[in-house]
Length: 352
Image (cartoon, rainbow, N blue to C red; front, side, top):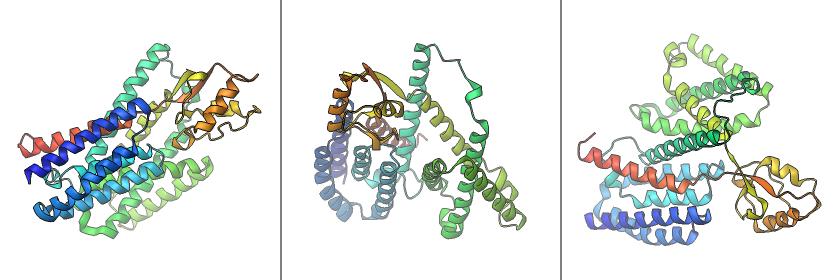
């Protein structure tokens, strides 16, 4: 069994290193790389779980189900590209289940990789933001008058309250299954927050306030009906802390989310800022970008790049444009995977 696990890990390391190299040089994770890895991992998994590791097959399937769902939602929510989702799926296939069975953290241990990925990514964003602030001498220039504290507070209460209600429903539906599975519940909460952020962005300020009042009204009624405990509704630290961290990190990341480049350096798959797309609207050049979402939906096609090049030489053209800065998630996925495997090793060797 050890030889097949070693071979799986060797192929996994090759896949990760190749993906990082490809992402850094071409901002793309090759489908050929993913297909080659799948071609190797599928038969290896069939042999491994069919012959040597049948006892771990349930853990393998629950972990793969969780990773597949997370990968799909991250792509659907435009958090990262399809290549990153495919890479995470392949990583799930490449890690032998016996190696993540030492750390008893629930049916989806692969979620720990996501925690490591976004922890490293957030640290990168914060450090990069500070460096950008120092360069433009605006590190301590905080304009409080532009901060809508009411909107922030309502948004915060909306997500905490609704997350609490969803957790109550999960408790009713799944019963004792979630008992002592805090890590698994955290994984669910993580996806809930991402979903709530999309829902929140679709609501107007008045609608968001009204929905928030209804949510907390329901929680208060549940308390007086003795359905939930007072401490569970108000002082449970986890939902307040998780939502707060995600909101703060997103705010920090959005402050320096852009980069000014010469127009002639624009390339396919880059994402133009909303301000840049607006500046294109007055041009008569055909085929200019129109998507202003500043996420993966706005990635430039070859035809749009050609149109921007024609726009550059027109009367309304500009020598520079603003693009959304790309976060190299393949590197963070690699670091997260290695961190996860290191933690498993430390548990196996009784270090932690």
